[in-house]
Amino acid sequence: MINYHNFIERSITGALSFLKESVFADQYAAKKGFLQSLDPRIKTITFMVFIVLIIFTKDIRVLFFMYALCLLLGSISKINLWFFLRRSWIFIPLFSIFIAIPALFNIVTPGETLVALKIFGIKLTITRQGFFGASLFVARVVTSVSFAVLLTLTTKHFELLKVLRIFKIPQIFVMTLGMCYRYIFLFVEIVSSTYLAVKSRVGSRIHYRTGQHLAAWNIAALWQRSYRLNEDVYNAMLSRGYRGESFALNDFRTKTKDWLWVCLVVIISAGVSYFNYG
Image (tube, rainbow, N blue to C red; front, top):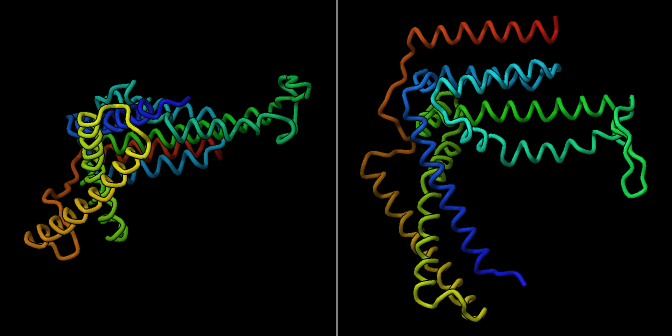
């Protein structure tokens, strides 16, 4: 029988752990590392160039080079390697591995036999073409996701949102993204406090009907609190001069280091392009 109490408690603990890791990630963006010192506009553009190169790369050796470059940039930006690997390998890269597995076999990708297998009496063959294609796909996903994660870890979220507005991303999209980022932490904290309050008053073992009533009551209470908070925040924004567009107080300034970084990116991009298509 499934222990739903432990499941709920583990889920809430996991959410709080995510909250702590996100706050810890903001500490990385505040460090005095190499990428943190670059102009966010320059950094975003150059990382987009890297991701485009990765998407169109046909040589897995180039992807290994780009991934090594990503790890090097993370190291000189004072990012903990284990923390970075956990952030960049969870979800999308692992999911891409499961997607790529069928492409290994001759049923999907015919070609030269690499390994012959017999699974449940069915003879399957891993082809050289399938193995190369699947490896290339996974390497592309891992490398591009790693660069995207590195960008978010080394850039404060409000600076990243400001860069999106500079690049003419719709204002409603940027505002919604910013609000979600801020209030997801508040929501997680409210859920944790509510669960702890219920547990301290009725204990961990209650009848399922009582649990349903408690859950329904707390959902309604959370909705009312959210609605009041929404009104209070909006009125506070209006009182501080909000007229449909939010502004960050800090202005971006390019320095010599930024232009040197741009030159290095141009050299790397030219080398990668020549290696791919030369």
